Length: 270
Ligand code: ARG
Image (cartoon, rainbow, N blue to C red):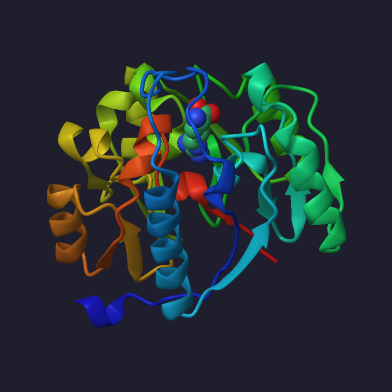
């Protein structure tokens, strides 16, 4: 079946973890006294970039800024659909300054950037499926932001409520495989949101709690290859059964901040 899965080449924006650290705690994975091995983080991150390039994707980089240890999580900076950039407004004051640095990158690259009025954390919570936006709320991005996103893009926005603080961003509990399907961890969602997902995606690939805790849902798919943590073994096997090709990339050092592969990756859709 894997011959039926078609890759689409992507453009990704990433930020080198030169200043990556855990200095504050804004999600349950973070403990401020945690030592981060920056050399190891750099190595793991470079392996992710190499994997993207090896598979034919374009990778752009934004310059990291000292004092912004979470800036490496590029996915939170914006959501980009059809060349239109909906920027970010972080929940945590510690992360708020990141938005302008990313905005500068986008402007220099030739994009206009919409500055949201409501709290929203880019692709962390706003996931483009190819037809509409799945939008997480409960911990970070607000429902007001969901309305703003719909107004800005003119695409339907489907609000989903996250209920487990370990999965505080939608991209820790769900990712898009291609225009027709997703993978997710049902228990991260409220009962009603679970029903919505089951209706929209009756053939979704479901993850176990072990997969989710390993950040297996914080994955990036190009339609065929799925860049995924090697610890999400059950999920990788299920993806393989569905004809996708798991490409293991270990970003274990970033889990100390509550992040993984997708968190480090902003997709620029032209
Ligand atoms: N420490 C960061 C935070 O809590 C991690 C962000 C992870 N990014 C993501 N797209 N889930 O904000």
